[in-house]
Amino acid sequence: AVFDFWLDHAHAATGMLPALSLLLPPRSLLIFSEDAYQKHLHGLADRPCDTLEGIANSSLLTRTGSPGTMPWQRQLQADGSLRREERYSLTIRHVPTGEHANSGGYGEEAVKAAAPEDETTAG
Image (cartoon, rainbow, N blue to C red; front, side, top):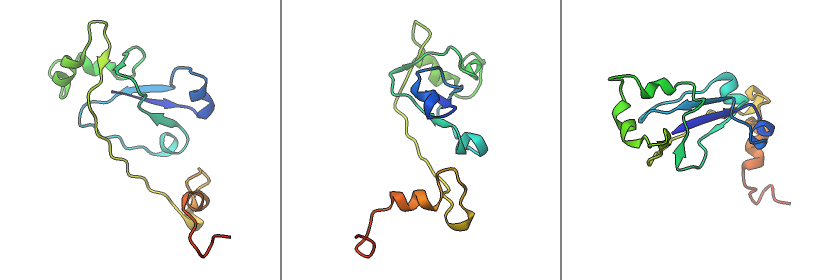
């Protein structure tokens, strides 16, 4: 699958190409930090096949003997696209709270806004 990064919501909404697209090998691990985690939107688009034009690391598909090359060979289509197969994803996030929270939208106020009201705070 191809994983995309956009600069912000406005960039994603325009339908413009992502700022960066990466080919994710089977059993891959992504660790985000700094701007990639805090500022850029990212995700897998809902589509049955990925085109490989403009993918930053598409050379992974042509490396002889590189780990993960064989699974991709069966996914390659006649038109050069890559057919998606079933994937599983696990996301773990550190969400700072209190006085150490940053202003990136993941701080205490965002946590409070997402939390359901209980009987003591309901008005």
